[in-house]
Image 1: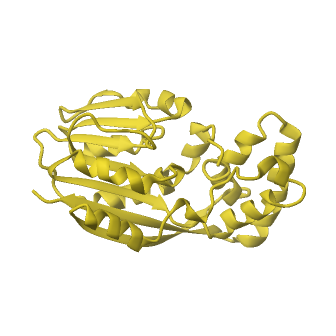
Image 2: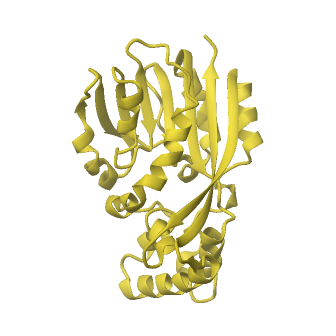
Image 3: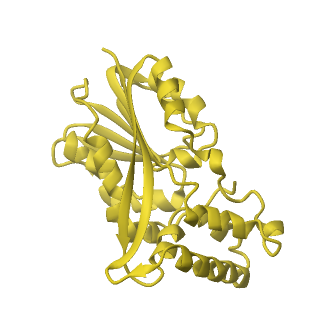
Length: 269
């Protein structure tokens, strides 16, 4: 899998749809034990959803971590003291290797762990870093089998593209079955709740599914072909035509069904 270069402006074009699952996740997180609480957000992106943590826990000291310089540059308007007396900071870190050096009341991750190979193996360290009564919570896209991903992989593996795009994209094992997450977290001693939700997202505009995936799943391809604009545009054009057939437009917009997986693991006090 190619490490993608991120485009925060493209990512934020669908900020409302991308933020909703995080809001739904936070609704299931119990009260935090710390006064004030200490929170880590892994894969914070441009910081817009990290800021929502300060709405829920106004006095918290919150640190958002990301490994993308482009994303971290967009977090700066959110950094500093919060209205409730807490603080919001951002720092560079890779979730694949991030090892907490302090105790947290909440470690949370929004739509990031699917980009982290072997993320299950990181859970032990993260749960160990939770305070007594703390919580580890995350949500991840659980639609790697959906047409927008399957068609992208099939096109990348076709005769025209396979030499340039082989092993660039994520595969089916980038996200595990819900029971795998539940079992791993429960065996670490957590009271664990795992569930799935499919959002029937209505997107508008010209080729809106393509516009959506340009901000996320297509980033590895765009990165791999960045030095050859003609090839990049050709791939995008072929992929666009496939998406138009897979996601037909209705009078009210284009429906993109999007399944997500949620987990809330509570460490007993």
